[in-house]
Length: 73
Figure 1 (cartoon, helix red, strand yellow):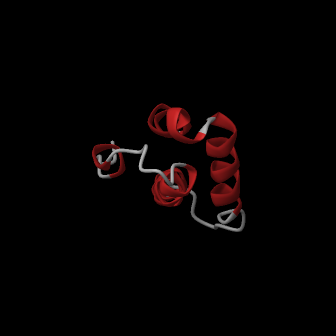
Figure 2 (cartoon, one colour):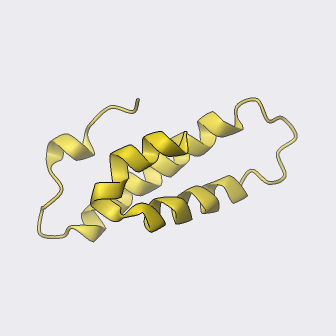
Figure 3 (cartoon, helix red, strand yellow):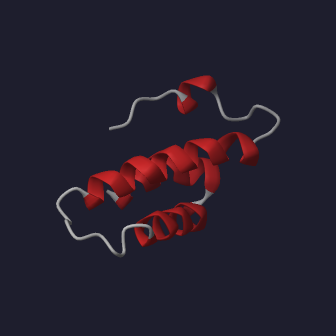
């Protein structure tokens, strides 16, 4: 899960930003009582948050539309 997000976002935001986002999103599920879907949900919500951060990190349009609209894998 983390590896896929790092592959997708490290070049755009840097590995520390991806790790920080993963830690923040994972923390939201600290009190979960059912763990089956937690990794899937963490990946989904972290990816959504990272997609929001890309334009903020590249305000001059350096992040291409293709990168921002690439499907989740």
